[in-house]
Image 1 (tube, one colour):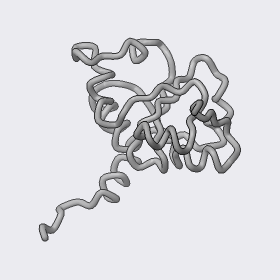
Image 2 (cartoon, rainbow, N blue to C red):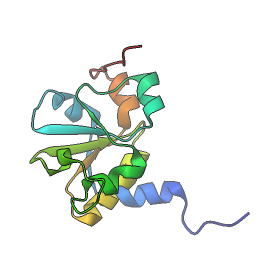
Image 3 (spheres, rainbow, N blue to C red):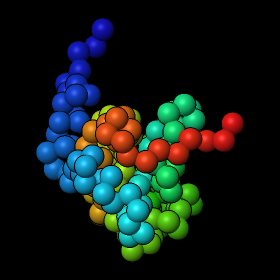
Length: 131
């Protein structure tokens, strides 16, 4: 087995040291703010299984860099809006890595420090898909 130079946990730790993290209590208080866009990086199956933040924009993790880039053929206009963007995943690892990469690209964003799991645990609003 190949020995990694840096573990995934170390990558996340490095990312968190240089990005803006939003704690769950603050994020829940921002849930109804029309100037804030919550961006859900989780897989569609996670959203179906666990629900999602009402009004959140779903952006699969693998597409984030392409969707925020206005020069990309995959660009999504939501990312051109003059709003505050808070990215999240289930526990804060994927969103930390994503926001670090987006900040490197010049896109200002923050992430939900402890993810959707903590959001739901602390009683943040959760919408479930119609089945």
